[in-house]
Image (cartoon, rainbow, N blue to C red; front, side, top):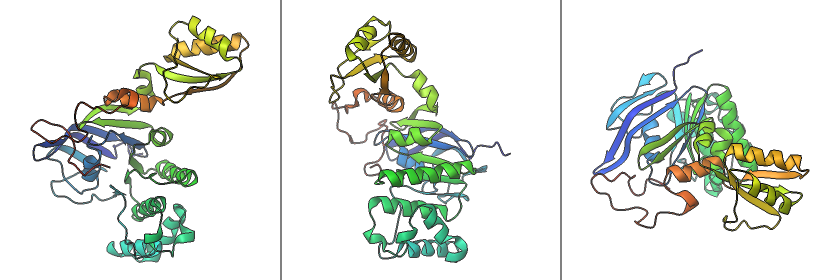
Length: 336
């Protein structure tokens, strides 16, 4: 079995004039892994994805994709496919015609390229002969995924693939990506949706201002995070509240905006203290009907690591300040 990483980036730097979009970024993705990429607008995600897809080249650093060093000329690396800033489609053509045209660009016949197979894979067989201009955002995203799968990539690079998907379609796409990874395809998945990253990814890289602020397993990220707020639904909220105040390391809080419910207890604690509270509840005969973080560990860590704790944007400066020497942000208009 090949243990060589599917993707290995070291000290990747990319500038646009005096704007530093990527500042010494390291990224490693093992084969058969779904690796998440997160960060606020302007963090450099789109620039990095464009480099991985061969749409741009770094100014410095080393990039190896599928065991081959990437050169200094923009070109799509062999075995890599995907989309950034949404898939490009011909609105006047049907779904099947869009894929057939793409297959022709690769010198393939639509039948031998497996156009109908990938349409079925993403759940678009029933609308295969409908024009793309009438597709919803979610349908266009799935058609873009089908286009990316035509070449049977070994590295799939996707930007917000769940954008616009309803719950059933999202579950379908998640299943497709999970099956691809199980078959050995590596996936780099950029998303603002923390639930997607938590559901799919074994590891995640978080960017802020063009730099990596975390990269590693989701479990490590949660372990390194500060105390979280947890929502507890019990058979006796008042008794549960008393036990919580008596448990070392647990703080009862009602500071979660928009989530007040007299039947729900919200506490702030690290894992060991929360475990002790649960033990006391069970020992006291209090039924614990629900226990969930108010904000997921990944989202909480994201907010903390990117300087957005509490979810409030920094109002001390414009969201997209004018670039100046040394300012690390992404060029305006490249992030959504």
